[in-house]
Length: 226
Image (cartoon, rainbow, N blue to C red):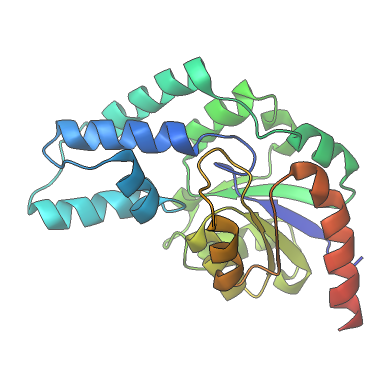
């Protein structure tokens, strides 16, 4: 096999959280004088860190968001996660069939991932190899987080395969010198999203996690030959 490490994004890849997240983010921003829809949050901020999103919002508002904005957003998200969050369909089955080392590289914070991965019985499958954009200077679409994850796992970038559902994630994985597969099976994915992931640089796209083990083998074999 050409790959020694499979790097998973979290939201939209392991947990089907993006619809919940975009709705909560839109609600809290709108309450603080920045009217925005769930769809606009999806289009602008999907795959990026809250820190990056807040910087853009504050620049447009011409003022800082409240000091407790992060706490308000976190509380809204966690309430929604407890009520509605589920794992991406068939992800446990896919992980059972993957023989390579795995880790998580997410724009989300560690407290958020403890909730989302914990609720979906995924945390113990990855811990302690769970990495957050809070641990690097630049979040996705910069390559920093993926390169950090590879260093922590002591695997060269060229032997890493990234599983992503967002354009910033695909861009960041490719910038890190890694092969990327684009997943478009989350409930947030609209028609054509897979094509957008491919256009951003994904080596292949798929919408069912049961396809993933076979894709890893096929893409790895092609990469080995080339």
